[in-house]
Amino acid sequence: MYYLYSSTKAMSGILYYREGGAPYNEAYYFTRFEKDGTMVKGPTYQCYDSDEDGEIGVEDLYLKDGVEQDRTAWEKETEIYRAIKNERGL
Image: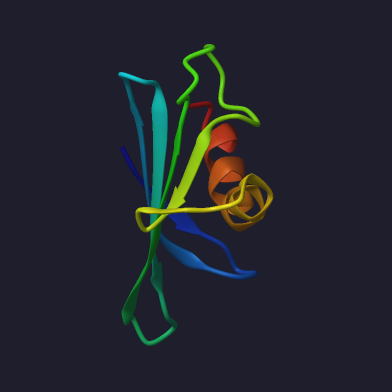
């Protein structure tokens, strides 16, 4: 799903969010628009319920552009995207 996001504070752009299965996973991708209209593509973030316990947690897989990333760093970098997702009730 794509969502147009606009904020007077930090950024405006399009957020792509997708849930998948086998195992359950989530993907986030944000394209930011600069004030002059230039599009700046951001990294792709994914998390996988690799232990298949029904929730994304400590033992699961976190990726940034396909490279494994520490959970804490991943959560910090995706905080705004997850907040937008929750704000939209997804």
